[in-house]
Image (cartoon, rainbow, N blue to C red; front, side):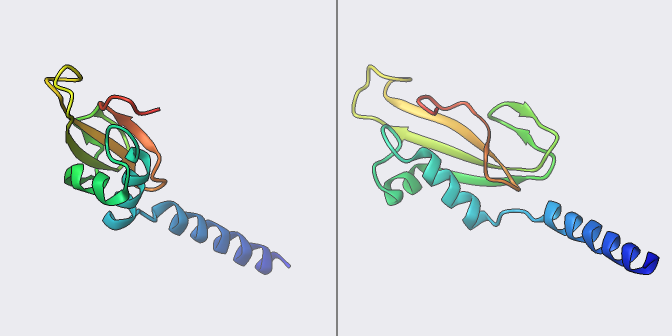
Length: 116
């Protein structure tokens, strides 16, 4: 009985470690970013939103351009959008970063307008 409990505990702990260590691939993170950004002013379709993503970086230490240092790995996306209205944003240009948690895909931070 004690041996069974030890095996069960070891299995549970090892599953927890494997589960906690799983990181999103770049493709998974990119799909998540597109879903978060889709809509005005970033693009109405996934293809249009994907075209606004200029660079993707995996940051193991979480040192982001969007919001500084975070103590967890993130995927950071450089997003640039040129809007038709030059009176909006910075002369009609949105240029910022979106950081997603590398494990969950949730927003860690962003310095982009109009994200809820």
